[in-house]
Length: 457
Ligand code: ASP
Ligand code: MG
Image 1 (cartoon, protein in one colour):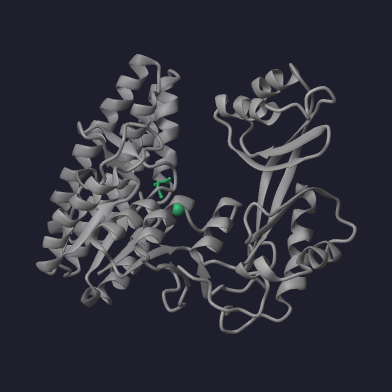
Image 2: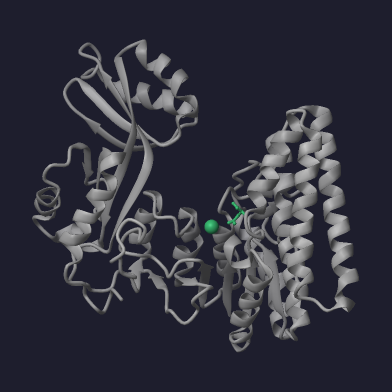
């Protein structure tokens, strides 16, 4: 059994879905279970509509809803013969009718609550999974749609629900294994779940990867494939460095470090259920299925390069706090963290000195309120337009001289903060965003001039 997850861009159009059908068809002997994202940018569009409706722009929201329907109709219609049309129309009428009602309701209430956010945004995956199951059947696959909300049971934390694992795993086995024994390819929507009482929830943006891992862990899949629009994990962003290489194998721990610090390939929590059950995760490109992708496994394979990849996350803010009075007093850090925690703002990196603490955040939504609270006991300054650059690799643990090589390669670039030690696999630092590209280029030259062919393509 394998789980194959296809992201939004892999199912964005008729031709993309046709490719997906071809990819799945070739491996039916491995008993695939398919998890799909919403088509293209559907989720974001639904969220925009909800905002508009709640802000009194109902007509605009309903207009966008019509456009979204046309997109689904056009792309799916192109894949089905006329005889399949009535079923598609039925599915579209039902789902878009409900979405229309929901928008009416949001506009009447003037509020887009987290519960409504989940209700509305869930339709992207509910639709794509139904429609793609239909397309699969149409090309002769024995496909069955499974409503993911009957499988993924979650708590009620809307917009970022946590699955209740034992129940979810039991449901995955009960619902999916019998279909597999009947030779059926199950098709589920990612991203969505439901509470015990049946209220629709979502796992957070990008959550379809997570769904795939949860379902894979539940049924005991031998492999979880994440099909996307890149060739796999790369040594760095190929847009910054065209010479970026594909990383053929990487460990869970290395991949998680990369994901946290900006590599866009995987949702970090994806890895948790897979790690627990020791199921390899493979990242693959649905536009170039012949490329072997990146295999993410429990243990790092031996590699003659010190690092596996460089990640870069822009849009970072440094918050500096200085307090001669307080810093050495115990409880100071505690007080700082409490402020960020109350503002639900995650801290990425931290550095401290005798009288000051600097930390970074990537979400400035509540920065004003944070600074106000910090000013009660320290001098505060904020620097925006920063970037966190990280080098990641299992060999960092026991290779001396990596910091010297790193900073030696970066002469002339002003390093604003450094963090090493918290994770043995990661050396991270902050530079101005305008220096980020050059930084990554220089590091790539330094660390990948010779790339070990067993690990890099
Ligand atoms: N459709 C959802 C999103 O855009 C989930 C996903 O694609 O992973 O965030
Ligand atoms: Mg994604």
